[in-house]
Every structure is written in C-alpha cells, then in structure tokens.
Amino acid sequence: MAGGRVSHGRDIVEGFIRFDHEITLLTVRALNAAGQVQTHFCAPVGHVQLQGDYVESWQPHPMNAAALAKAQAIARAITGDLGRGLQGQPDGLGLYGVELFVRGDQVWFSEVSSRPHEARLVTLVTQWHDEFELHARANLGRPVDTSLESPGASAVIYGGVDAKGIVFDGVAEALVHDADVERARAQAKKVALLVQPRVA
Image (cartoon, rainbow, N blue to C red):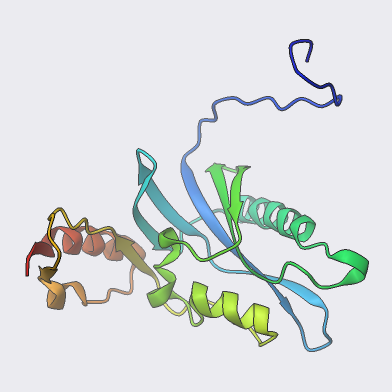
C-alpha cells in the first residue's frame, strides 16, 4: 500500500490455486409468477481452455453435493450483488456464466459474464432452454426452465484455411448424439477431428 497512488485501506492479494476442474455454473435471474426475482441454476458445465482459447465443454460436469452447494452459494451471492437495482427495481435479470475453480469440496470464484458464451454452446443440445433462450426469456419476463434434457459435449473445429469461402466435410458423422457425458466428450473430440475444412 505504501507504493500505491491512493490508499483506500483495501488490498487484493492474488495467488496460484491448485484446482481439479474449471466449471461454469449458469445462473439465471428471472421473475417468478409473483413478480419477484428468483435465481435458477443449470447443471454445471465443464470446460477446457488451452492458452486462453476454448477447446471443449460438456454438461453435466460431475460434482459432489458439498462442492455444488458451495458453487451455488457463490453464484447466488455474485449475481445477487450484480443484480441489485435502484429503489428495489428488479435489475440484473438474465443469464450469468459464473466461472469457478473446483478441487474436491473447495470452490473458488474466478469470473462472471452476463451473456451467452461459446464455452456454453453445449446447452444447444443439453438443455430444454439453451443459454440464448434462458437469457432472452429471463429478460422478457417469461418462465425459464434450467433443467437438463440430456448429457452432451462440444469441441472446437478450427478452420485452418485462409480463404474467402470454406466448406466442411464429415458433418453427417458429427450429428450423432450420445446420452453419456464421457462418451459424448470422446465423440465430440473425434468429430472435431473428422470434420475437415477445405476451400470452397
């Protein structure tokens, strides 16, 4: 603090965390039938990033009950604080992606985004209401359903071709759906390798 430009009496201390998994807990703030803000949670989304780039995601990510309860408490506190409106107005409605680090029963907050995100596109095949529907419905005052339809996974396909138009081969094989999350992850990675870009 002695070397800082201002002194507000607060410090932020950062350090490395050893964690097993990074997850996103999709948290939705929506109005209930009585017009009150209610917080809903989707099943955790597991994801992998390499050098800051999203590579794959899956839902649900397995978590023990204690870690899931801590994750939900953190997400509720973060989004509740962000959603505190002026004079009791229900600001902050919509979908929040609360990213967390998990190690056993321990959970640490990482960051939050108030919008849909590519790491959560897996919800297009896993959720009854995907991330886009949840965000829109919450903001429009419509009922939301955060329940899981079936497990699924997604993996990035890089274009790798410098051209104005490219096409992708192997897409038919990519549309096979699997009901087990581990097999879905393996299938998503396999499909990402099967689908190959070429100049149109």
